[in-house]
Length: 419
Ligand SMILES: [Zn+2]
Image (cartoon, rainbow, N blue to C red):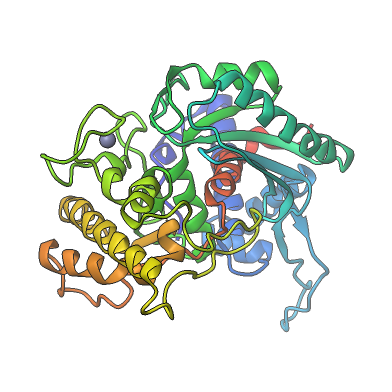
């Protein structure tokens, strides 16, 4: 099923502008039908699914093929009389979305084609807490440059780019309001990146929201609803309702890490106190456990999956017991913060990413206990899938950033047809 389109009713206005707008609207319908199909589809399939005539669907698909947004596969026999159907799918290796990410402990760049295939990716592990934003952006530009060169050499067009950053970003101006864990605030981050990298349609978004976008893609369910919780130095959340990202009035939704767990709790870098990050952020967990690093945190490439480490078989080991206690405290605090969000928004599933994914077995008992106690709807629906580890890539925000750039093609393919 296609998502509803608020501009759909405007597409039938008379005159040439109306005709162009109608064609743009129909191109979008055709493109999204192809994008959401589980397998390659024929022009007749597209006509049927999108409610278009065969002739219109055929002409739209021709334009998308000519524009390198869609590709034809070998002709297949339809099993019926008449011309055999030519299946089409989103084009591979022709148009890319570029994801960029500045996180507290790494920089990442990833290029995906329209079908979501990885064309290139780079990760640089580094400590950016309290760093100079100009230097961090310079390092990011140096990481991105060879990726761009490779895309150019392979004649891949860049449709757009998105920068993921761990903090609330002003959707209209691209200003980063505050990233307490980086020590950055009120920064024209978009301007800084633009000065270093010439990128078409560069936008900036919140890391957790973009990670949720990558998780949505990995599910293969365009109508999924969940809250993605990213655990790390900071804690963020991305909310997906019926396949659509919810980012709030300004794009600032998902600051779960700064939801108050205890009004009398310790001070937080955001200026408040008793925030979730003070109990379940990485440094709070390490301090509580008396550890320097979390056990076996996976450092896979952006393409790898998360593992499941430090989660058992260490009974009697005092280090493991201290970690267990710290994770129980984190699970309790996460349960308190999340139950408020779930009660307010009727969220369907909690997906745990980052540190929370690979330590889920240590986190889950206390987390579930709090949810069971505090979520009003607990027990009204099957809960076996209520909390689960993320299924998406190990560095989901940069993947989600690339997907967000590709989403702009899906929203208006007419604007991206090759000249
Ligand atoms: Zn805070």
